[in-house]
Amino acid sequence: MTLISAQQALQGLGGSDSFGGRRSNLQSLCHVCGKYHGASDHWQFMQTMPQDPVEMVDDLVKMGIYKENQLRAAEGVNAYELRKTLFLKRIGRSDPKREKLILALCKQAGGMENAFAAAFGPQAGLFFADSIRSSQQTRREFLRNMAVGAALVSLASCGQDTTPPAADAPADAPVGNLEKTDLQIGFIPITCATPIIMSEPLGFYEKYGFNAKVVKMPSWGAVRDSAIAGELDAYHMLAPMPIAMTLGLGSEAFGVKLASIENINGQAITVAEKYKGQVNGPADFRGFTIGVPFPYSMHNLLLRYYLATGGIDPDVDVQIRPVPPPDSIAQLVAGDIDAYLMPDPFNQRAVYEGAGFIHMLTKEIWPGHPCCAFAASDQWIDANPNTFRALNKSIIEAAAYAQVPENRPEIAKAISERAFLNQPVEVVEAVLTGKFDDGNGNSLDIPDRIGFDPYPWQSFANWISSQLVRWDLQGDGLAPTIIPETGYDTVGTDVFLTDLARELATELGQTPPTEIYREETLKFDTFDPADPAAYVQQQIDEYGV
Image 1 (cartoon, rainbow, N blue to C red):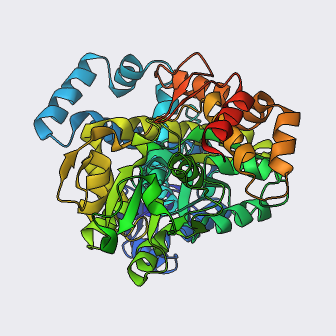
Image 2: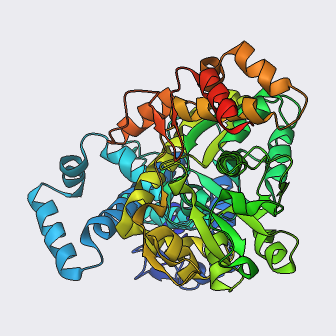
């Protein structure tokens, strides 16, 4: 059956014609449409029609052959069929016997629509409209199916101008009044970004109505500059970056919000293979050139914290330099750096390549420390509040999925692809599962080598601010001045959106903490977030820096 034959038969060939109401002797009863017309009329008409389904629908509308009521009905036909297909796919699990049973149960419920309502409540239509948006069906395919549906409606109506009930929302309707659905999210190719990366291939963005693409960035400097320029929508950032950028440390002052934490732990100090057996503690790094991914990073702050406990002045006794994570192994092999504190998978990749060994996981320095975060600029959030909320929620849900150990092999496979981490799957899986060789002849099993707890504790923010004051990374006295004057708590609550993260996690059925501060226990001391200034002074008094 052609798309137009039924409608043409009904409107043009089935009644009077140019012969003044008399049927031509050349006309006969059509076995396709059941009306009288010339035998070749179907074929001749279709030769003039465009082959592209979208163009065809447009032409039929312009010609008046498809009326508005027929399009609405067709949309309803297709919405029903799509809901039925998605219902069977989701619940039937591609098992024919299971699908047969489900259809029988639907019949018992009084039909598919009643089954939808029984299974999913009164918002079933909205649920399946969202599922359609999340499916792989393209707009072109939807329009093609709608065209077929319109022909079926025409056949059924026999020319009657009936107006069916309104159909569900079309497949491309926005969810929850999203201001924007086509998004670009910048990321650095490291396992810290797991929730942000995996949300594309595993469908977490699609679930919330987004056509989101993650965009690989070359360095943290590029991330910062791109955010200030407004080139992308949101970003994977290091946890200290939103504080530093908002305060104007390392760049012009530019408001950024830390929406949720991407990962806890997940970093390591890796040392070049040539130093094997020579590095056992912080004092042994004297004279080294050590790479970190960015000055305003947990890596730099944790490294300085660790070195100082061994009597090392990080600004005098070693050289700390920024190295983009993807360049770290090459620089280690070339001898440009002697060691690095980097995110994975580059620590594990160094072991894999025989370039270095893992001296210490950062979880040994501070168990449960934050590392990376999902962030967006104040300007973008103000312009897209609903989109920001939904995007943050999708990433918080992805983080919860990544926190489940059983899901990590699947995630490792998804994010190892060339478009994302571009790493051997076994390297990424070793990081995510915590089953790894450390390059010192040890096979270890540390399940919490990396974790994915998205809750942005305000105590994290206060510790970060305390170390920005302690080390004055710009050397101009700005951080030691502006942070105490503004107030540690004020800086934290202005940048870390703890309350929103809790609210979204609760909506997802999670049980986030109700507190915003907690005492943080590190390897060499305990941090009381209520008095960061005293903590800094205690460190300086004890270690001299």
